[in-house]
Length: 171
Image 1 (cartoon, rainbow, N blue to C red):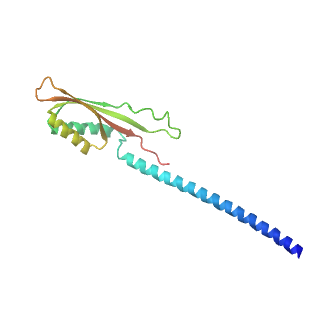
Image 2 (cartoon, helix red, strand yellow):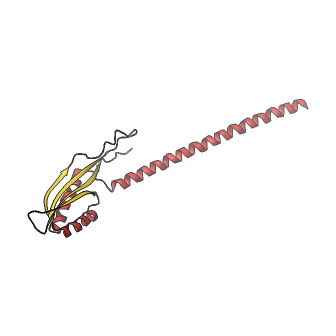
Image 3 (tube, rainbow, N blue to C red):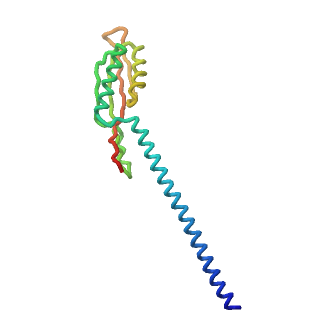
């Protein structure tokens, strides 16, 4: 009888070790599954973020130049003279890649400088139309001054920002 108890105790001990091992593996698998799910969720969020970003950036300088041409057309629509239009194709974005530990950020902030002359009440609707029709530019700043050469007109110095991004290659 004692041998039988000793034998069963050994089996019972092995069963408990196996249960403990299975419980540890199960816990580790759950943890790894959660990590995997978190990675998949972050990849989906990144894909969605890039997709949203792509709606608000240029990918070619041609698109950037076309935005400026469209601004000139809108100015003409409101009988506003474009005194100057300057496309600053140099990057004005703060240096992000100094701080990026994982991947370089393939985005540049570009500037469109406008100097307009027209009636004050026509320049407001011009701003509205630019916002509606050219989704890829953002009004950064503006300054009005009186036009010394025309009594009923103002000079508007306007800066628009836009963003250019390199298209991401398939991963």
